[in-house]
Length: 215
Picture 1 (cartoon, one colour):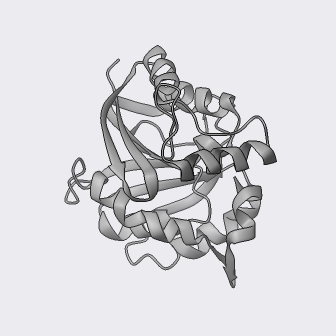
Picture 2 (cartoon, rainbow, N blue to C red; picture 1 turned 60 degrees about the vertical axis):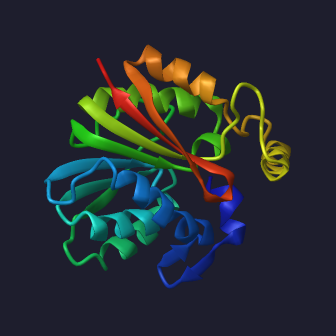
């Protein structure tokens, strides 16, 4: 993920800024607010936290939520910590290393009420998507929810043309990556006791999926 997006980012001291993270965070928040009571003390694990921009933003909107950040790229830890240091309630925990394709995720304070993942599926190999549901299910409470965000293929079809072009550009950089089919994700999720609860169409041709652990 870092390799693809770093060229588009701007550095601000120890903080790294991804313009896309700032653009989509409000839309993701609107979905999360449908399911999460900001007055409740809950725990959320963010898998693939990137720069830490979104974790810090969500932490201010859910002041009683404890957010555990994580990343596979250790070079991003400094940025995640820098953003977290600016959160008034100090409810963003220092990042831990998680490779979504490898498990179990023994470094996190399980179980969690929620898991969040933004823009990982299409910029990582398929085994990361498989591992995300397999190992994520192991650290999520029964009845817990997973929020995922990004561009998707549905029933083998990518729309609109901008997403077709986006998928092509990703695969040109790395043939192992590209937009994932929602039906394939549903199948893997179901194998791990997780079902798709709701699908939201969001701006910029992205989708937010809400998944629930049922077993």
